Amino acid sequence: MNSRTFLIAFFFLLELPLNAQFYNVDMTKPTDTLFFGMDATTEDITIPVNFKLSKGNKFQFGQVTMKAHQMNPFKLPKIFLNNKAMYVGLNFPKLNQDAVFTFYNPDDTSTFDIKSPFGNNAAELNFVFSKKDLLEGDNEIKISVSDKDEQNGLAITDLKLYLRAPLNSDNVILQRLPVFPGGQKAWQSFLKENMDTDVPVRNGAPTGRYIVLVSFIVDKEGNLSELKAENDPGFGTKEEALKIIKQSPRWIPATQNGRNVIYRQRQIVGFLVSEN
Image (cartoon, rainbow, N blue to C red):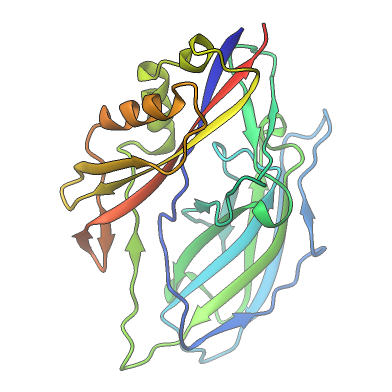
């Protein structure tokens, strides 16, 4: 038997609390569910979504959110607002034991891909924008997928756009959560180079998935402390997940309104045991 590893690094790179004085903007899209299925001749798919901004509209920030079903979380769709590339955040807000991921082996059998679940456990994508990113009148969001092998089958639902009006008595909090230096790709490389993926096999784990949720403090300097595993699938997976987090270099700390803050990060480390 052999084992392969995967990691889902999920965090909002930009997070805007929309808890007061915000309102939804109606959008025009082809269908309620946007499908990105591709055939062998398709090189890319771009789906436009349109909306109007009334003249004199006053707001400070806006946010677009959507659910992404059957998505590879390591290769996010490209999203443009009025032809400006947006920085997209990823989150699994309801990740639990009922969340079923799909695994498949591409031509290179030394690797594998995962895709986000369907339904309420689906991944959520979001991006934040400022007033200068919108135009009075017609505006357009484009969601683009260019790799049919990575994202074939992706579906987007619950696409929503919010604008947040300014209040003199209300402070808008703009927050960036902790990030591994170099982002998700660097984190995957770190795992590949340092994790002992054969731990569950050596401990007699049967074929299956073993997911460990680890939480830890990232301080204002990016140092990690107070590591703990919030579950234990067994077969040495908890210990190996904690060990790899302890070996991690400093992270880029969380910021709030431009200042470094202490934050408890949650990270998933997973093992896949499969037969030869």
